[in-house]
Length: 279
Image (cartoon, rainbow, N blue to C red; front, top):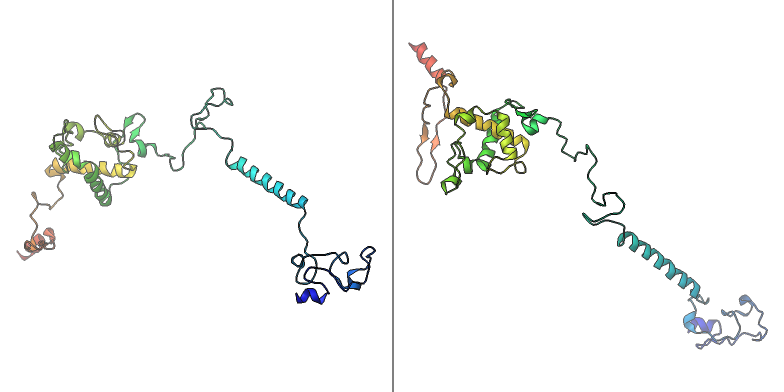
C-alpha cells in the first residue's frame, strides 16, 4: 500500500506518525497529515479513495427516500397505464340515463372521406327516382375501364355479351340472370343500373364494398355500349362504315408456335376517294 504508507498508515489503517493524543485530538488534517478524522482510529483501506480522502456512503435516510420516490412514480404509472378508467364495449354505465356506455355519434357526424356532397353521383337517384343521365362525359377511357371491371365482376353471371349465359348459370345455377338486351332493361335509366350494383337485386348481392362509385358508373356506361352493340340499327352506323365490318387482314398467318400478325388498317374513305379521282 504505497499510498497509505505515504501518510504513515499501515494496511490495517493505524496512523503511526500522528503525535496528538487520541483522547484530545484537536489537530486538523493539514497539521498531522493523517487522512482520517480521528487520530489513531483504525480504518480499512477500501474506505479510502485514491487521493487519500475518506469515501462517503449514502445514509439510510437518503436510500429510504429514493426507494419511496421510485415506488410512488411506478405506482402512478401503473394507475395511468394499467388501471385507467374505461368502459368495455357495450357495457353498462350509470353515468348516462339510458345506462349505455357506447354513445351514438353526434347528429350530422360524417366520417373522414365520406362527405358525399354529390348525391346523384353516389346514389344514382334524383330525389327518390333513378336518373337517366351520366354524371360525367363518357370517353374511350371510361368504356375501357368499364369493360375491365365488367369482365371481372359481372361477366361470370351475365356473360361478356350481357345475355345472361355466363359461366355460373352454365354450371347449374338455379336462377339465370336476365339479359341486358330485353326491352325492360333497354329502357331502364342508368341510375337504376347503378342502384342495382350498389344495393343488389333479388339473389344478386350488392357490390358497394367491392366496386367504388366511379367504377360502377364506368360499368353502367359499358352496359349501355353492350346494349347498343347487340341492338344497333343502320341509323346508328357512322357514315362510311361497312356492315358487317370487314374481317382483319393478316400480314403473317402465324404458325402453331407463333401468333398471327394483323396488317395495319388503312382508311377506306381515302381509298375510295383515290379510286374516284382515278376514274
